[in-house]
Figure 1 (cartoon, rainbow, N blue to C red):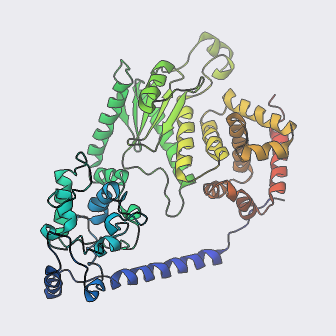
Figure 2 (cartoon, rainbow, N blue to C red; figure 1 turned 90 degrees about the vertical axis):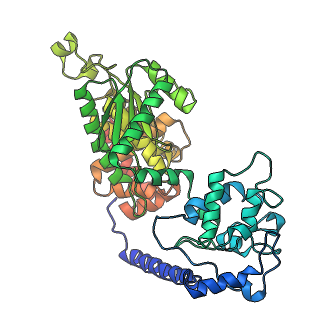
Figure 3 (tube, one colour; figure 1 turned 135 degrees about the vertical axis):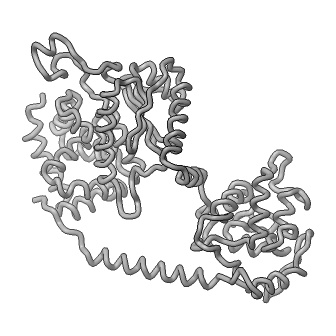
Length: 491
């Protein structure tokens, strides 16, 4: 019988102690490489290097010089030039193709800070404090052959060269806390991290203005004639032609679902749904505008029947959807008013705008939060959407598909779906059913199970055992009994 088992605290405490010891060792190792950057000691080092450098390739360093530690790490602040932010990305993009651990053309390996400082057999390529005597600087300026990077059209920008010169002049220092032996490709700031760092320095109002400008630019590129109204929320920016009341309601719904998703998907050290800017929500009155938007922005076609989409892995992340009400405030008809308040029973739109946006937001956020199986990302989106529109026929169809799979052979069919070995409509239905069952039967445990599954499909049996104290066979059988009892009248 399925029950909730507590995780062992011993394992957590043990891992915490190991992590603390690792940090202590790393700190001690880094400090052992540091040298003072000011005062007489630093000056003596510079004078000792003077004779070993010139505009020509330097001779091999003496044994005593070669044994000296790398330059000191910089103070941990955000002022001035930083190797990981300003220099390493340039070296990774322009030098690492030829000067890596495998090729090291000219006997120069630049794959780590240590190796960059060490130089080649001919001598050092960087002379801390003396950019005019550093071969690397002279090569990239074209003042010493061969010009680097090679090729007439591969010159570094003047501003980039100036940064490298200034960094060398300041002592060619590595950032505090950075590992000098780590691969440059691992410690170099990515273009996205640099963009986020720049955005983080802006005020909230300035970030909103950038998001609005980017959103309107996207809207224009889709060749949509109407200009969108922009409505900001705490975490979203809505671009639409909705009425003020509907826009506020959509944002209210989305903010609530954002908080649910963030709490569901965030793990220690791995927060979910954190962006330096608000997520744009694009809402189009008709499918023509939506399809044109995706074609223009994503350069791809949309399958028939698809009404919403999301991309959280780009600059200015977004969710886009067709408005089921085509821009109207409410769906109203005499038939609806006279016969029923359930719009879905009399021909109204079967989906709500908030649910369409939520389903796609959940799908994209789940995929971004780890390496989840497809049943989780598809199923969680549908499950959260169902909370906003419980009467929609969309979810009844998902339950019908689940019952059909049960009747065809539950164990084999559900394992195919959980392993991603069948069509998306079946995978979505099975994932939706699983989460609906867990949320109703084990409301306290199922979020923990979801977070565990973000580690990958191979964690399924571990999650079943740890969270529910059950084998997979027992788990699937209990789930099937719930489906038979709860979904039996869906046809």
